[in-house]
Image 1 (cartoon, rainbow, N blue to C red):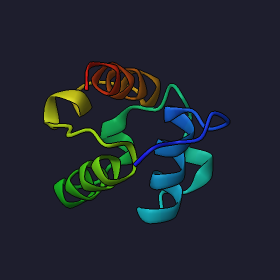
Image 2: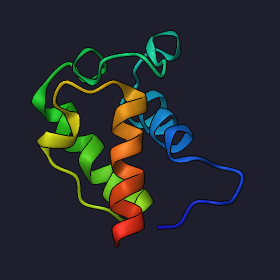
Image 3: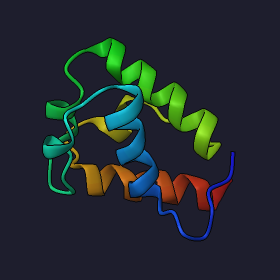
Image 4: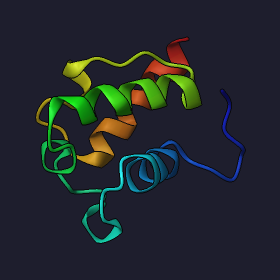
Amino acid sequence: MTISAHESVIDVITELLTGTLEVPPEEVRADAPMRALLEDSLMVVELAMAVEERLGVKIGEAEFRDSTLAEFAGAVEVLRAAA
């Protein structure tokens, strides 16, 4: 549930996208729209579950909507800080 000091939230999300969801690594950039990275609603659900398991925060569609990977990671960081 915790991440090491050497890992950032964006690194963990990138790992989840490329490893768990098999998004091609060349597509995973900080400025990439989350809608482009997550092709369907099942991928959204899978990422939400993986983020909750790995980072300990529940996320909803609002955190994905119209955000880039960097913005999404920032939203997750805010949620982690508030927890």
